[in-house]
Image (cartoon, rainbow, N blue to C red; front, side, top):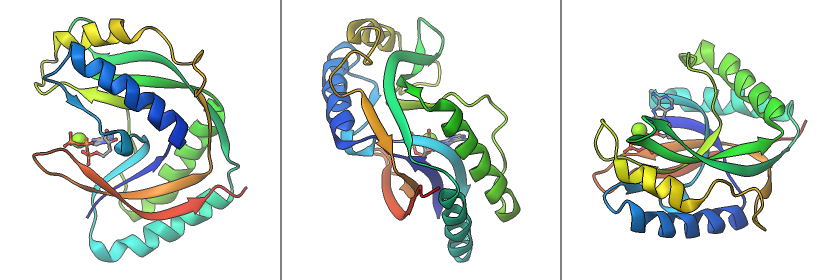
Length: 190
Ligand code: ATP
Ligand code: MG
């Protein structure tokens, strides 16, 4: 099964980002826009894992979650990955308890390494993906969407949220977009 570890925004933030997605779609109709209910913050992507390893992964994540407190986060600036003029990914960044979030991510990676997880080498850039270009070379219209959505969500009424759970998700890929199913929600109880 294809697994990853994430935290979720609140329903209020999800709804605000859902409205941003509908607004952004007008600027870049060909991009793959995230479904509102699928918005998440990825901490570790495991990829394909043998089914029988899932209980050990869940147990390791439960231990990690027990050592970390809930995280007070805030959605912030709109940004992109890839070329500035032809972005590959359009996202909303995060502010707030980023040190705690990074510590959680590193603890997750350390706990999963003995279970086959290969730690990410790229710098951690916590973000909530709103859209991806359909082509690997990017989508100029995502730059227009970035400008059209404005610089920041942090002034909005629904910017703050508390991440209270570490979530083990299964990803089902399909031509209609990935579907994510929570396998386990592990309370941040530290
Ligand atoms: P699709 O691949 O169909 O565009 P997706 O990327 O949302 O959909 P997955 O590829 O299963 O679905 O990825 C699940 C989550 O893990 C997403 O947040 C994705 O950005 C992240 N992810 C996927 N591959 C990697 C990777 N190699 N390194 C880091 N994160 C990854
Ligand atoms: Mg992917």
